[in-house]
Length: 123
Image (cartoon, rainbow, N blue to C red; front, side, top):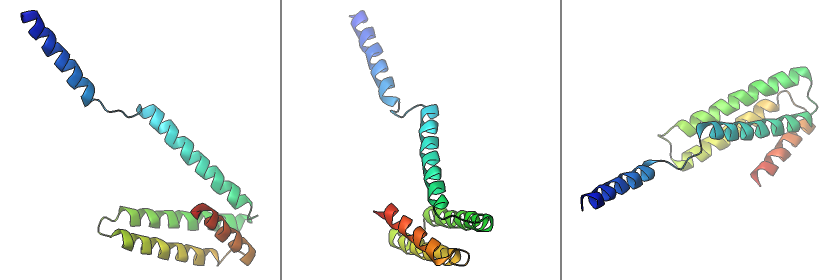
């Protein structure tokens, strides 16, 4: 009887311990997957930018505008006081401001390519 109780307690402890563990991938695998996704996105962005045939000055301006836009979007997403609809509107406004800034240093043809790439992303 004592052996059965001890066995039952041991089994209960083992089962409760296994349920307490999470089913997430090890951190190194998550980091690798995250880095891979980030790298693919960056390469995709670089390919799209290469299609624009930017001058060195345009490239620098584009990078600055992109960083500013990315920071703006991140701050919108982090703002817990905003509703989903407000966030959507602010993202739309930020996108318009970004395109307006791009229009100050891109040619109309280059701007059309940027807009076309955006449409493809949205689909």
